[in-house]
Amino acid sequence: MQKSVFVITKMDCPSEENLIRMKLDGIPSIANLDFDIPNRKLTVFHSGQIEEIEKSVIELNLGGKKISTERTDQTDFKENSNQKKLLWTVLGINFAFFIIEMTTGILSKSMGLVADSLDMLADSFVYGISLFAVGGTLIRKKRIAKLAGYFQITLAIVGFIEVLRRFLGEEKLPDFSIMIIVSVFALIANGICLYLLQKSKSKEEAHMKASMIFTSNDVIINLGVITAGVLVNWLNSNTPDLLIGTIVFILVVQGARRILKLGK
Image (cartoon, rainbow, N blue to C red):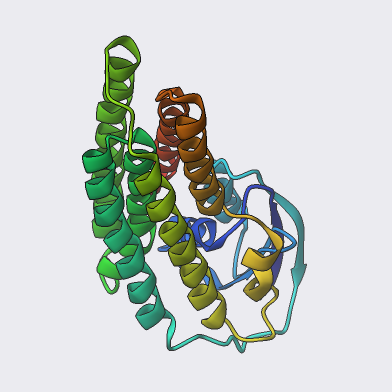
């Protein structure tokens, strides 16, 4: 048995962990994956050569780089039997807030909330790809990843067009109070998701503490929408809302590109 250690510089939260797991799924030589998110490291226990594994990690564009490979006698790996149930819970929370933020974003005329809802949808895709394809073939998993990625990009493009239309036209100010209230609840929902994901890991695993060490993109986005709501009220302008919407749409497209890479 071989043990290869990778440093993954852009691995900040469980979403990246799931992307990596999906990418490496189907490589028969892999016996186990051990994630250390606080230190941004991945340890792969495998047999045979490392080249295919290393190529797959690099293709994700998460800053992956192999730093060592050595022999190991370890053959006993712990698996969490509750992981599937908790992933369903996290998926449900993310998808519910996708609907809530999309609905309130349209009603309040806030592009920030609409964009944030797509980010929630992106997280749902990440967990859903793993769950809906459990027990399926690698081809099926890749097909689901492609559909999810293209759907997400399509929604982001529609969002960009709407942002441009509002920049050029006369639009009513978004309801800043709804922006702030809904984003606060979304912030709480993200905190619950991170807590549940931590809870699913055994205490010996270092990445259980990941979300306490790193601030996830989701939390930053929630705070950005809250700030935009305050600025909309203060400046009496919809520009802050359109700016945060544009930024989040860009992040959504980047996330979709990562998902599409799983389909290759």
